[in-house]
Image (cartoon, rainbow, N blue to C red; front, top):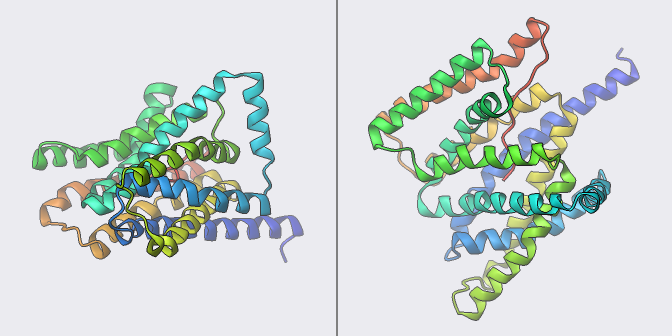
Length: 313
């Protein structure tokens, strides 16, 4: 029989795996909601998402781990006021990604956005090397080269990397790096970022309503409520998984989400994928598989495992 401590650890890992996969599934489902909120624009959707998600997120944190981390972040800001500006900058960077996640499925750029999330782990590896002097293992070098082959194919076929792809792959690393540099990467900071965005979201909705551009009606209420529940639950489950799982396992499981986004974009949203696209997605898929193998190889060598984590959106 397992000792009580090991039993609790195994139970925690099991709960973490369920939370991580559940978060990925909910983020994939979230990609389906914007088209169902027509004729709302991407800007209106992100504004409503902030408004309806925040109460759900706060309630879930209060009922589980509590809101102590929010108080700790506020105490740090009182001691070092410049952190307030960093928090605002983080919120602004995040708002761009939230807008993209709402706009892309409506505008037919869901697949481009999913490609950005596929490339994000590799982009984070490069950020670690360039900005933090991290050394790349041979497997990471292979993964980066494979991803660059996919990007090169995209450039050769289309003449450029899609706007949505670039915004995710290069925008999120800036957001991540800023949060980490100033120690604002915990759940408390996440809640405060949403609080920073809340008045902006309210102003956007009021202006839209005042100018007659607001498209929301009482008929949208059920879908907006669902948007809040799915968004808040997905983010809460993601952060819970990051707390319960070993770092390497958590990193591997976060690769489930971009794959689901590709499936949602192609199968459910009907975006076309041609034979030529295999030249782009094939090397990127190889890169992700190689990167996923790295923690296993590191454990065999007796080295600490580090895996880049995509971020919630």
